Length: 587
Image 1 (tube, rainbow, N blue to C red):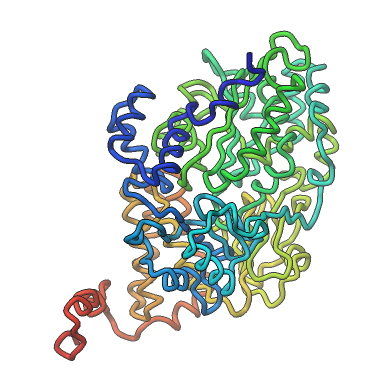
Image 2: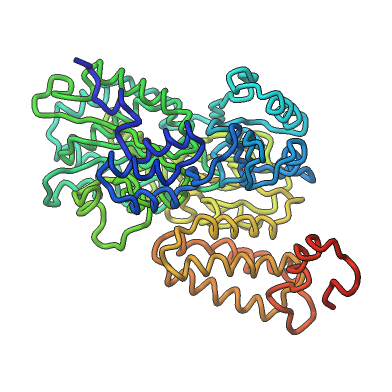
């Protein structure tokens, strides 16, 4: 009899997303016949499977290339390097059109949102594997290997090497939780005592919103249900955020320890780690950590000999959908459905996974809980501020000499972080990714804390020479692309914000357009279904307020210009007819 749960061994049969990934990986697309086959296997309708395939970015109904390349379009790990566009270059070298599979079926090139490699320079996914530190020379080398049809196994190993660039160790990163050390201490006390301990520590969720962790556990524990679940949200997708990637690489034991402690407190017997699809390369490592914990009786039946304390953890890997970082969308995805956020209330603590009470915490929060269980609430409260106890782990990237992961006590100033990462002549910092806050130089004394600037971890630095309006354009496209499409204010509003901002970039906007952008931003923030829409216009409003002079320089003196450039819209027709004479243009 196998000593591990079935999901550790028969991974691809355990979840519909895994089964679809297996088909995508082997057949390079998911055909209608395959969808029917999967529907029969998972007792779903074919239309349900089709809706899942169409929702996730990493599933394709048409074949992609044997070499399938997805460049990150993030401002930190994206393909635009100064004046050099790496995506355009490889397309030119390989004679492939972005977004289309080459005629011989060997290559396809596209772009995707941030892949969490912002401390590793321009990066891409090739057949799902991260390939980092891209530059002009490496792109040429890659195109040669693809032209020679060399399998990835024969490519230089160092191209795929992802390092853990921890630059500053603080409360959590200075110490390693030995497997079982926190758990054994916890089991000496009753669950309510441990819960009181977490509440007294002041631990708040590290995803940015900052809900009290102990209260969340308490609500779940007190809710009626046939079962309870612990879910770890490892779907960090905010551009510029990569600290969970580093924690998963280095602190997986502490994470699983934190999940087990939560299970002990709320009475759960099952937990899930939801891993973003971009981090699939970490799967073997995480599965091996789980197997070691089962072998040491730190998971499974009667954990550490405690009769009645049974807890299993299963890993589910996403398939490219930023919105699944929202907890109710994540739960939908866990249930094998498109990741569309639910209407709340009810909240997951009362009706979560499979309609049962569920705690959803992110990676950093659960690791902090494991440390608190071992070292005590006073140890944790010894750092931070009155409302923000403990530390915050930041992923710092952009225009600085030392990008990487930094851990600080809450209350650290922006200027301190900039000094440590060696960033000079900085004009602005984006805290908390595109959904967060853009802070101008005059406010660099502000603090990272729930009282001032809360963040999930993204800390993007923009130097003096950076075109901030281009950054806004990148963020606007990101939200329009990642909107799940469920509600009109978000689906249409984010697209309109993108085209409106493009009008500013093109120098065709008037002061009337700025007025309309503000009204549209307010509408998207107020009437969208979930947090994506509520925060999608933050960066635009920040720029209009703090960098208004730069926006005004791009405005035209005309009282009105059309939203659509009709002459530019005819460009495709001119190419098709091979005409470029005066009569082929509109005045």
